[in-house]
Image (cartoon, rainbow, N blue to C red; front, side, top):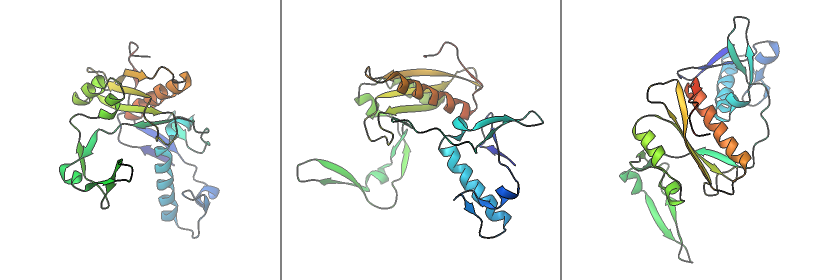
Length: 226
C-alpha cells in the first residue's frame, strides 16, 4: 500500500506491507486487532503514520525502489536512539489581545512571577516581531525575520542542549527559499554559541536540510552558509 505524505511540491511516498500478518495488526498500538475489520486496520495505519511523520520517519525510514521505479520510504525500520540535545521550531506567533487577557500574573513568595493560563486554550496570531527571545540571548534575528517577511522562510530552528527543550536556546538556523526558485533552498543563517559541540551543530544543520526536503526542495544553494 502506498501513502502520499502531505501536499508538498515533492510529496513523499511511504509503503506499508499489506499481507496476512499486517492486516491482523493494529499498527497504532502494535497489538492484534480485536475484530476482522479493514476500516479499523486503516484507521490504525493512519494514526501510526501520523505519529511516525511527526517523529522523523522521513529521516530514518529505509529508502526503497519499487518495480515501477518509484522511490518510497519503508517506515518499519526502527529509529536510531535520540540525541542528548533537542531541536525545535521557533514560534512565529504570539497570543492575541483577547488571548493575553486570559493570562494572569501570579506572584510567588520570593517575588518572582510566572504565567498562569486560564481556560483550555489561548488564541494566537502572527507575531510582527517574532523570536524576540533569541534576540535577547544575543542571536542575530534579522535574517530570519527578513525571510519570514518576504515569504521565503522554510524553517527557523533552535538548538537546545537537552532533548526536552527546557534549556535556553544555544543555536539557531534559518532555512529559506531562493527568490528565483521554489525548488532550491539555502541555509541562510547559522548562529551558535562558541562552546557548542560540533556534532550538535551538525545535527542542527542536518535537521534544516531534512525540513527543506520535506517542504519540497530539490537541492540547496551551493553558496549558502555551511
